[in-house]
Image 1 (cartoon, rainbow, N blue to C red):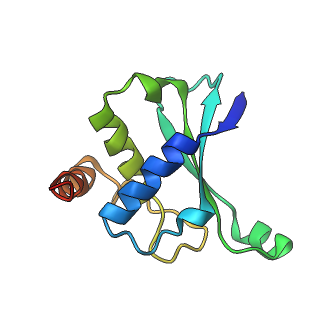
Image 2 (cartoon, rainbow, N blue to C red):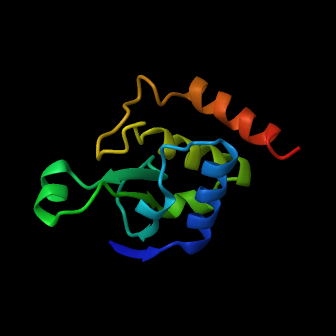
Length: 122
């Protein structure tokens, strides 16, 4: 696996956070990363968190990384936006290093936020 910081996706992610008013997400502590070489079959992106034990050991606050796999680039712009929204939804309102699971981060909830995002353009 090879990783590289994705500044263009970082900018897009921060714009989505701003337009959806996801005030609990600190864009300075979420890093977007592109990865090449994953063997994952259907995955286009995934969210990673710095576990509480590491936060304590390193004396830092929670940080998240959103990894975008090669397949992400082949999605339409709309599906890329949906994917970014999906990954952001995994970050809980506490922004403490935990995750929201797929009982909350589901197609219906992603679509609701995506519609809000589209309406915010007007």
